Amino acid sequence: MNMSSAIDMKVAMSNSPERRGKDTALPERIQRVLNDDQMATLHQKENFGWTVAFVRRPLFQPVEVVLVSPDASDYVVLDSDGSTRPFYNVRTTDLR
Image 1 (cartoon, rainbow, N blue to C red):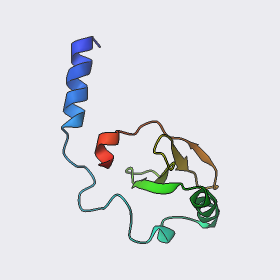
Image 2: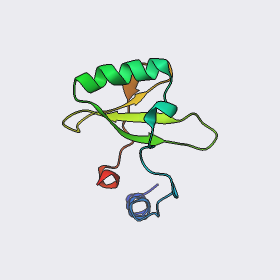
Image 3: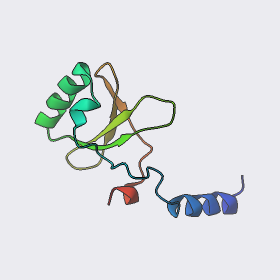
Image 4: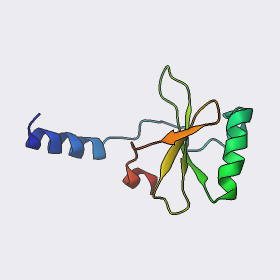
């Protein structure tokens, strides 16, 4: 892939229409989406200022809950076993 096609693809992605339809970035009751292990980790992270940034609902895959640090510099995915892992696929322009 040459540089100009990579730039064209990036521009096309940034202008893409909203794909989640009528769903909101955060469900009204996050407790319905999380299991007990995830809830325990979420409460621990909230004590340090972390919040739920958004919930990803990819087709045919489990729901992914993404947390953001207090200064919005780090994002992590809250896995089903309550562990967290770095999440790098964030377009910060989408979160405004």
